[in-house]
Image (cartoon, rainbow, N blue to C red; front, side, top):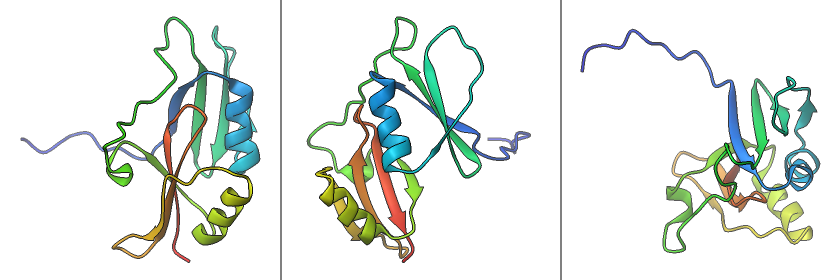
Length: 135
């Protein structure tokens, strides 16, 4: 393959289709501490959240969006399937908070080969979320 003339500069946003904006907002804002930010006046419902320099864009499921629920086969290894990762201050303390709220940790906490501690949870639409820390 010839050398690419394209140079990606950064991740701008990640978009998910969701069944319920209020429930997803509770997950991304109330649980994970993201800040809700304004979004343009699209003709479909949604919410935007800021995390560092990246945004999470949620689109309420509708005829043109495709389904909200993400499918993760039961037999797959959770850490080896589609997911996105957020760095947290302390993965072990995060695990304790999740347990106290009766939020299922579907894998981990465990140490990655490169050092960080990681754990996995599902968002309300079964998108797989990795939470990790270097402490």
